[in-house]
Length: 577
Image (cartoon, rainbow, N blue to C red; front, side):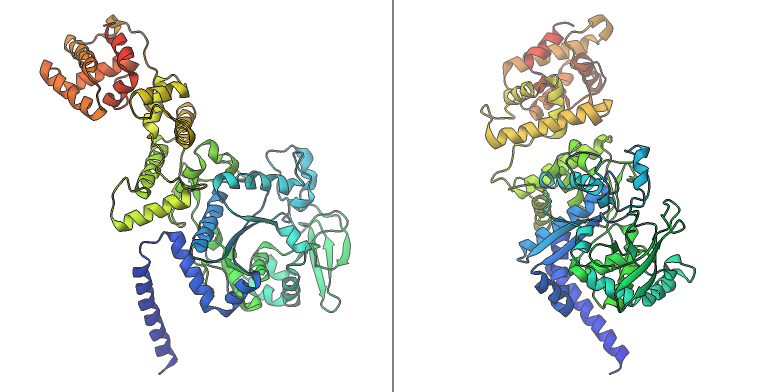
């Protein structure tokens, strides 16, 4: 049998296996599927298997340069890794998500949040720059730890480390020697990928921290003494356009924190040095010829180490899509979008996780807090998933497993033993506005409607307060006028100019409300009965009722709205006609 025939048979066998696997896993959430794929890959690859054994766990890795305020788009990667690690642990694997601060990267442009006095640090590693705020060890520590401090609230379980500290500890020493001993091979890879004119193809791929001025961006390695393991370098003015060197020349060991790799070399060096099993990144890194492609080639040709999932061999796999705000990619440098630390001031943590965990990583998330439907649908879908999880809504088995798993991975903290009291966001906003933004009054209205128990305490009260607070924030900060109103206390009957039939219908509603307790669906039907009874157009009746209550031609679902307003306040307005 020829080699080609063997290859074709292997491909066919893999396809058959893939079909069987897909059939057996069709109910899994993407995080569960990835957990299975990662385990299968590790089991089949001796080098990955050894990395797991050496570490004592499956390492899921991510990193972020703390150059300034970190936008919530980065949080998508953090929650993706957290979800996969949780899924792996659910399947009996010892998995850890480690997030590293790339704090040894250079400060490469003025920070818009700081004045020009900070420009003197441009070119230095972030970890060696003072913190703009007291209480943090450095510039890097301040911006990075502000995000990490939100992790508990968002249910992200991660071990935190410093890339600079990893260099200092010698974690990358072996990789540094390998790269420097083979720097011509690395240059050749640069040439193949980016052409002979590529500047990186002419450099020794290591950036020393200048012993004189402390800058890392302005140094250029000039020679490597493999026997003495010393790197000669110059601190120059022509290395980058945005920072000036001090003209110092020296020779230094590249080990133990005296410098760092350029990013495209550092990425694969981390994979082999730390035994990374899974590491996603934004899709911009996964473009053809991008940093992931380059890293795969270095991992294969220099380190002979398999790249982390979702990459395999020289195939990058797919990075995660951007988390967009109103259709625009968020950008730290352009000051656009929502800061990661501020996202829970828009929606609570479990809704943040739901937003990021429900779609697959390669799906675009376009979320705009000022779009009513974005927030309303998000809450409604979360509530539905919760009802499915607790068996309140019946769906087919596949949908039930999927929605339940999404709910589990979205929930922060212990999942309650019974379904929390649910108040749809729109209805909570209506009641809160009727209560004139008083949450305790809103609770009383809901109790009078039998929507809440008379005795509300403990975890039940917590969930109700959370939803009413969410509704309050939405109405006061983000909702459009379509969802805002102010309940009339008095009216001018002459200015209102309601048809006498509409007035009669309203008086009849008061009478019917006095006769018994109503459910909203039942009252809704009664509105139509009344309109038919006195021969008034339903559209005129609804328009007139809304004008009476809020001075607008349209408003919330009328039956539920009238019940929330209550007989006494409704009658008071009708009596003024």
